[in-house]
Amino acid sequence: MTIIIMDSNSAHETDNLSVSFLNFCYNSLMKRHFLLLTFYLFLTGLTAGLVAFILTKAIHLIQSLSFGFSQGSFSTMIASVPPQRRALSLLFAGLLAGLGWHLLAKKGKDIQSIQQIIQDDISFSPWTQFWHGWLQLTTVSMGAPVGREGASREVAVTLTSLWSQRCNLSKADQKLLLACASSAALGAVYNAPLATILFILEAILNRWSLKNIYAACLTSYVAVETVALLQGRHEIQYLMPQQHWTLGTLIWPVLAGLILSLFAHAYKHLLEHLPKADAKSQWFIPKVLIAFSLIAGLSIFFPEILGNGKAGLLFFLHEEPHLSYISWLLVAKAVAISLVFASGAKGGKIAPSMMLGGASGLLLAILSQYLIPLSLSNTLAIMVGATIFLGVINKIPLAAPVFLVEITGQSLLMIIPLALANLIFYFSYQFYRFILK
Image 1 (cartoon, helix red, strand yellow):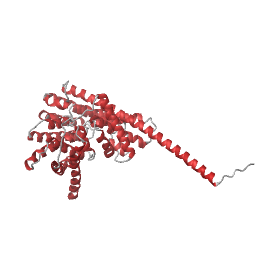
Image 2 (cartoon, rainbow, N blue to C red; image 1 turned 120 degrees about the vertical axis):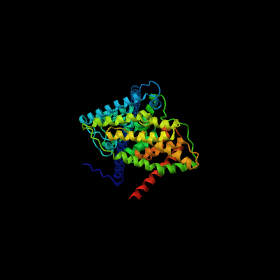
Image 3 (cartoon, one colour; image 1 turned 180 degrees about the horizontal axis):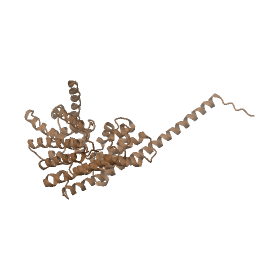
Image 4 (cartoon, rainbow, N blue to C red; image 1 turned 135 degrees about the vertical axis):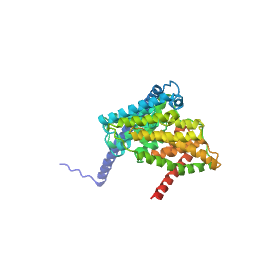
């Protein structure tokens, strides 16, 4: 029998080979996982982009059927629609909202928010979320005065969950895909990829890491470019001339941050403490119908309250309304939003909060110009107000300034006055909380 004796050098070389082989296997597995994850993220962005494109077409179809215009957009045509047709569309929207969410509550499973699904690891029914999203889209397209961004998010999450369940993904990776799907669809609707990245990290995942940043960047840009490819262009939602600011005009965003943050937080507090409606109750449908009937009455005098808020914001940007009409339109929109949520009907808060903030910013600018000799653009004031309300009500102070810059087609330098206003509202809110204690 031959005995092989290995010296210490041979043993050391064998150990090195073993370590190298293990490293090679580990790196290969990690590389394979990274490539697979990249593919799934690309597919998620593609899903979100397709959802955004299809739902945008559906919105235009429903709006044209509801209000009778074949050319132009809802935002520019709504004031020319006969008052009785506006009111009738709202009544049908109320009937659909009442019946739809009542049946969904009785026959489906509980509706969960995207944040609950991602952060609290709550199970959900994809098809309940799917129809919940379509109900939001349909009722808002018919004139309900709340946001419709939930529609694209819910449908994108539903479709992504259906195919990702078959991909043998870890629970963490699947939640990452769902988070990216919900936000990328929103970003694709608004053509706002940079803000979407911040929205995913700030509001949905609530955790910053290289993996999350990579996932957010990839899905956001794929979704936005998918819509641009299908439409043939990158559409700017609130197109306006390039705005310019000076060091002198930075004084006003500071003032706005101090004052408007109070109103934004007060309205946010009001929305959070509205009575919770039971969608299974026999009184749910009558409550929704009454709420929408009241909104229909308001729409006769204030047509710009209808829809998600884009019509109102464009009205402020491109028209020169009287101070009293701006004030009453602001009150009417705030009341209409509150009526919808108090009734138990659903909707988003992104565009509505921007309209409320834009109106508040415009009012403050007009009043402050009587007191302070500033060459302040009303457009800049509207953007600052919209940024503050968007950041406060939707809890996205980082994403809000970038979002406003992207959807208005401004240069990135415009982030500076908007971010300054948001910084002031954050510190002023902390100060107000300290005083109230």
